[in-house]
Amino acid sequence: MLDGAIAQAGVTTGYDPSYVALEYPGGDVPEKTGVCSDVVVRAFRKAGIDLQKEVHEDMKVARAEYPTKWGAIAPDHNIDHRRVLNLMAYFTRRGKSLPISSSAAGYQPGDIVAWELSSGVDHIGIVTNMQSDSDDRFLIVHNIGAGTRIEDVMFAWTIKGHYRFF
Image 1 (tube, helix red, strand yellow):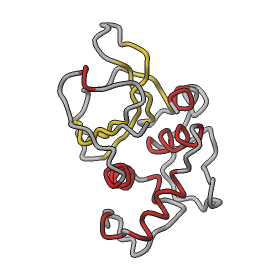
Image 2 (tube, one colour):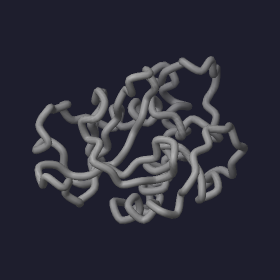
Image 3 (cartoon, one colour):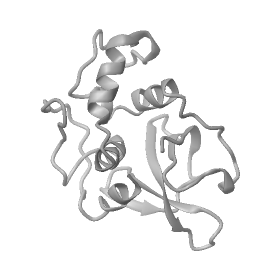
Image 4 (tube, one colour):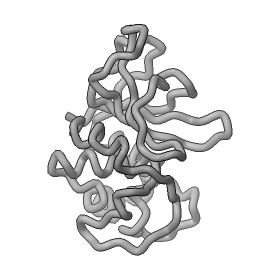
C-alpha cells in the first residue's frame, strides 16, 4: 500500500475534483489527475483493496453512519469513495481509528491522516517511511492541488482523523 502511494508522486500531476462516471468496481479517474482521496484509493488498490467497492457496499448497509453533507440520498459508486469524510467514516466503522497525537512518534508509515485545512476543507494523506529533514517525523504523500507530492506537512493543519488499516 505504501509503495503504491509513494509511486503516485510525479505521475499524478494534476488536481481535479470533478464528478466523473466511473466503472464499478475498479473505477478510477485518469491517473494523471485526481484529489487527495484518490491517493488513498489508488494506494489501497495496489494492496488489493478496492475502496470504491468497499465504501459503496458499506454505505448500502449503514447509510446513517455516513455524512449527508453533499445532499446525497443514496450511495453513489462514482463519488462516495472520493470524499474524505466518507473514507473517515469507513475507516472508523472498520475499527481502524487511532488517537490523534501532537507527537510525531504516534504516526507510523502507512497510517492515514485526515486534516481540516484552514479554509474548513477536509484533506487526507498517507504517512510515508521517509523522514523529514529534521528526522523527527515522517513525510506525507498527498494531493492538495498540484498533483501527488511527498512533503513535510504532518502538523501543517488541524488533524481530525488518524487510522491504521494494515
